[in-house]
Image (cartoon, rainbow over the protein chains, first blue to last red):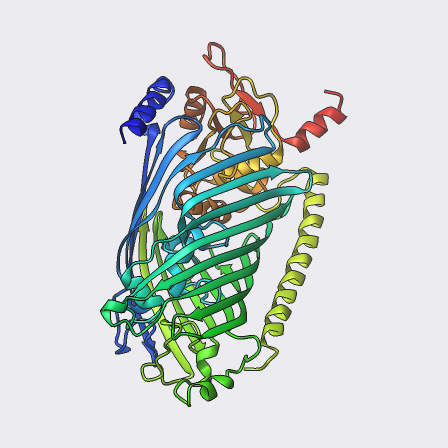
Length: 396
Length: 191
């Protein structure tokens, strides 16, 4: 701590002539509260009653040490029902280094070390920041809430290179690290009966984005590889055993902006491998896929409407889920292997930094509800279910 | 639920690509027409904070970096959307903008950057709330814009066309940049 403090102090003092105190510190934040209700689903709560658990609050700061070095961090408080564990989190906290490596206006390099965000998907870096999304709930095929804590970022390192070529702008991003998983997150992701320690061993991501010159198009490709391990708590009567899991993903991203409308789409193919954990000798290796297409039309500067189709299949060899009832003696219905969602939304930009957002979701299937390995057909008795939400947000 | 659902998604994506391609074709056509006529199309009040009808030219870029001689349209676009954050000499770029509802700001984004105000706002929001960038400095009018850029090393901003001239006794030289298309016009005219 002392060494870090001394180094920062030296760097800060070396730049005092350039920066004023207000230049050096930046503080921003957001707060959002709303209401949500589901019908025939435990996605938000078990009762299907109107819930006010749509709370998202965040406060962030950047501290410029000098022109190349900064410190950045954000804390968030989230309470969104059963979607993921309620509570405060250090969303990101990293050292940001942006040196003049290339001495060329057409290249830039950036490195971040610490708790870094996942910047590889269109909405991954700000999925909890309400005014950066087009709907209260993101498309679950790609932005599965159950994976929120491990997909949002990781403790590690991230690098980015931007290159302005004659064809357009290229962005190359790479990151490596691991996310801590606490017991509440373990229960959400794995099973409420689990008593052992679930850990993410690593997550490794790479993405390339390209925006052609003189267009408002951006396309990208990203890949992800991540390993998890489960250490059973034998002394605590853990019903599970030691095990491991691997998650791999390939994704295509695209977005287009026009004067009065915009389109965005992401499709992905993912592989999930499970070994042991449920019981000794358990093994599963399957490919799933999904994606969404969404459009937004700006009626005027204050109002816009959103429409989205989101599709997801857990197993490409059993898209209709016929094998699941056979494998579970009829306990788990076939609709737990897919989830298709149609969303209609409306955004009202009430004033500078104020926005009201509402959306309605029509859903077929429950393949993106947690816990993944222990579906609950009692709380989710219907193949078809609905949800609506409304959220008021303010940011500064 | 059919085994071909994923292909349905691909089909929808295909339709989307087709729509975008058609829009692009129209945009390129419109852009070519715009260049030929040298008249802004979508925002008639270009740079028109004071006198809309008398400001047919796109707003003018001003910057406070005496050692940087030239910037490209592409670099400009990435600077004002927060992606490029340093001048080639390593100094931090300080982006200065007017409020988002200012006609000059909107004209600058549409006519100079060839982007859209909501698009730029989204890009900044994503960067600010993921720790990747400081927000731009927001000033209330063009006088404040001129003063902020003049007094802030590394700053870049914009003014209505023709307003970016240096005045006698100015402490720092304010470089102006009219954009590639106008530069081409100047070159072809032998200026």
